Amino acid sequence: MTVGAGVLAACAPAVAPSGQTTTGDAAPAAAATELTLWCFASNRAQWYTSLIPAFQESYGSNVTIKVEELPNEEMHNKIQTALVAGTGAPDMGDINIDLFGRFVKGDKVGFIPVNDLLGDDIQNLYERSALLPWSWQGQYYGIGNELNACLMYYRWDELEAAGITAPINTWEDYVAAGKQYVEATGKKWAAVPDLWWNYWYMFAAYDGGVFDTEGNVIFDNEAGKTVMQMLRDWVYTDEIAMLAPGGMIWAQPYYGAMAAGNFVTCFGAPWYQGFMKQNAPDLEGKWRMQPFPLWSSGAGAQTATHGGTGTCITEQTKDADAAWAFIKFCNLNNESVLQGFEMMNLFPTWKPAWEDERMRFEDPYFDNQKPAEFITAVAPEMPPLNNSPYWPEVTDAFNRLVVTPVMQDKQSVDDAMAAARAEADRIMQG
Image (cartoon, rainbow, N blue to C red; front, top):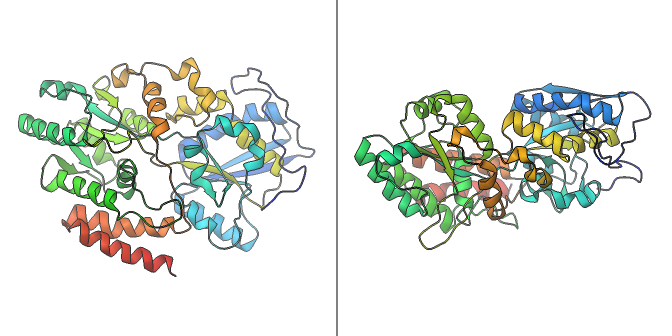
């Protein structure tokens, strides 16, 4: 899909959120316009709202932004229905990385591509987190502001007391250390969440994933089976891990167990650090971070991605120029993305911000380590997320037919993978 000449002219912000002047001038819209932006995450809604006054100062007060927060599934369903109906969509929508695939089925995508609008700015974005998850057939339909490079976190005080040396370099060493810790303390080493994303980033770090670059299902390749077996073994054979209380890494029982010291290693993206601080504040200074372990053979990557949200412009927008200007203002200037980092612990995909001294702070929660040093060091190894129109259905099938049977019902990995592969094939063959 192409956009007519003059539509969506990129406008660099003239005033940053702090009130500092930046390069570039923005042309205000000719008439008063109210643009709507639908969100499903309250923290992102707060971030957008905090940027509106500075955006209006930069772009023109005759453009107002109305941020509306809806439940995740409801919001995506309403946008999809409106795009099919041709009316009722917001000007902009925050699209969950899990659900973007549903919008690229069929011949028409209801979002405006931003490839040409980005221009040289594309060189300043970390593409694998900022653009690829909201892309299809060479077109970028949204911008994500989160560089979700996962790391391993560990209770250095507990490991030290048990005589365990960190960082831990290989997964084999990780299991051995877990056995040593359980024997010394009687407590668990890890908590394995009951959600497919936590398996996806482990698969991806070992040259696996859900889809390959051609859209073929690969979750049951050697990497997928090896990692799935390893995680199952942590719980039932090695007995170093528990199933995560509450199932999810945002469930209160999970953080209750973390705060109680019932497990001492975990994995997650930079936003997960914010969850840890909010939900287990008394553990400040007791955690440290490191890259993912590799396999003893040297295989694997030291990170992978987890989650993300991309801001998209719908074809029904009342003012595409102003919508793009707002998205650009939020995502493509230092002050805006740093405000998001300070508010939500979202590490920016906008690379110029990485060198800002505010990103290089020592974090007391992580024993005064500098998170930015770890995140930027592993980011180049981040495996790409290969999208598909069948992403939502296939990942749901994987969760139902692999994660739950294997981790809760002790089903064999081979049997579960075979069942999930048959279901994925059925889904994709229509």
